[in-house]
Image 1 (tube, rainbow, N blue to C red):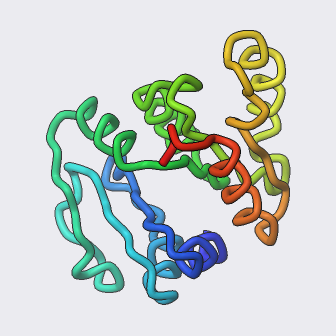
Image 2 (cartoon, rainbow, N blue to C red):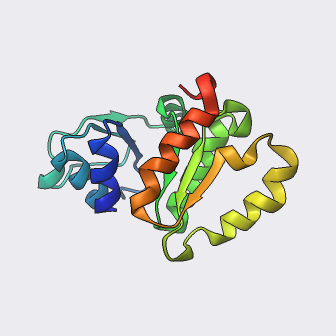
Length: 163
């Protein structure tokens, strides 16, 4: 996560993190901030931030559904990094709240160590029948070095609806 945070921040992208059960991707956030990046947390349960995250802006929204909608509205693209099943579920819910394929907002998944291989199959089997240009909206990369290239490509393919 640290490598991804620094990489995304160096390219000038703001990272919006959805807090889930007081869980945050601390290595991602710390690396993004160290690289001069902007990070926003959308959550409710964050009682206090660890010292390394002090001063981060937090949008506190009590309603979980409203938090998902807020992150969805802020996102131009969704980036999934290997992590927990809960974070993958949150990623999917945010994408759905954004309008799924109709929104034109791409999902880029870092499939390191085949973390999202099941989703790759799901995308090919299910989305291909119901989402136009699904292969441009669900993009996979197997290594961190290619992550920003895939994000840039997916945003350019998505067109103005994702901006």
